[in-house]
Length: 297
Image (spheres, one colour):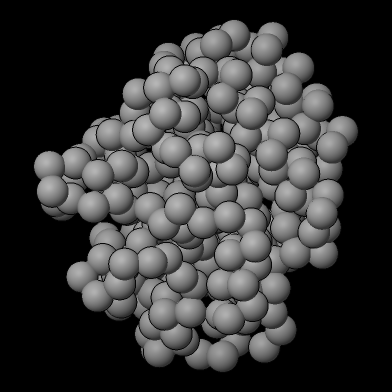
């Protein structure tokens, strides 16, 4: 098998990694620290790594390329800050890294579209991770609709955060009504969309004939799987949606095995997937081929 492509990586500007609390306050980001920083005896769910450490962890796990995703920031200025950092990263390592631009449509679609034009001109290939339930507004607001229209016209892939509607509650878990995603997808049938985290379970609804037809341009990533699902999700998920719609994504530097590990990494998750019961052909699709096709690599 050729090198792996990780479709769901986060990396933060050096000043954010050095002092997340101060950086969040400075940028007036309320949700992000509530999710990733320590709370009431719970240690941080993130490993605070730099670009060099990411590349080392990629090498150790056999990850050839990684897609740097923005965050669902609440302010336009924060999106721009991360985008400028990502531009430096992909310029320094064009053979290893690709990037999605972060935008906050609720800040105004003119600001978002100007930022997207900049991102396109600087080699970005997509938009996201986005989440209106944190960033403000709704999918059917004009500001969000303008961003999706731009993405469709410019053939940018969009990554949307989706939380599972059932299961355990955790700090800052945000509800993402699944019907909203169906309505969005029906409105933009040609837009290529990645629903993160197995689409909050929407991947399993592809056994429904109507959903299967509507979701023809929808893909799912595996980000954070060990924190949400048993390993057999790598059999049941592809069985429902088709292996050709599943993208390997780790959610690095999220700590995926907090009971036994205190630092982020990629190797254990990769090995778990290798031993999940998928065939070599299916592993090749999940780890690389699907991403190559979707991103035009």
